[in-house]
Image 1 (tube, rainbow, N blue to C red):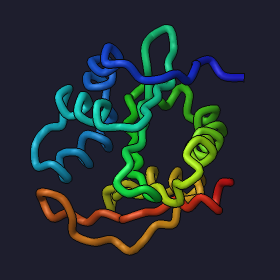
Image 2 (tube, rainbow, N blue to C red):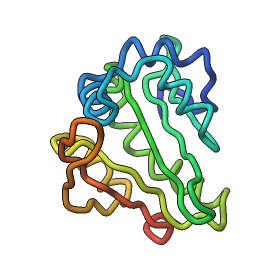
Image 3 (cartoon, helix red, strand yellow):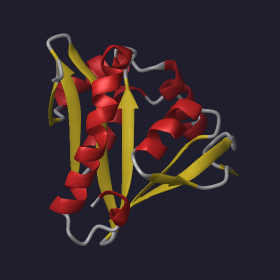
Length: 159
């Protein structure tokens, strides 16, 4: 049982998320974009996504994630968490694979979910591995040229 519900993300979720982003997510976004990401960046992510969801509580959403198709068989996956994820970390981790598998079921032609994660963010790396991701060697990436780890989650890892 969880103390939150997963639902489609809405624009009115974004201010709460932007104001409460975890330090690791802020650092990753700054390294990638070279500037603070902020509310405008969240709006862009939401508007350009095929689907985006939040895990919501009476106090507001604590994580947002989505996918954006880049080819018929591949989508970018993204996720940002607030400082409040710590309270829900265990139940969320237990459920997240189910939500990822759901995208592969909803989009039968989708074969890969891909993106990059900051090279120093070992917590993200562990979570991604739990989700079935294959992490590739770090490469300089983003506006600052810091090391990021490309990753791929393949359909056959979840479905």
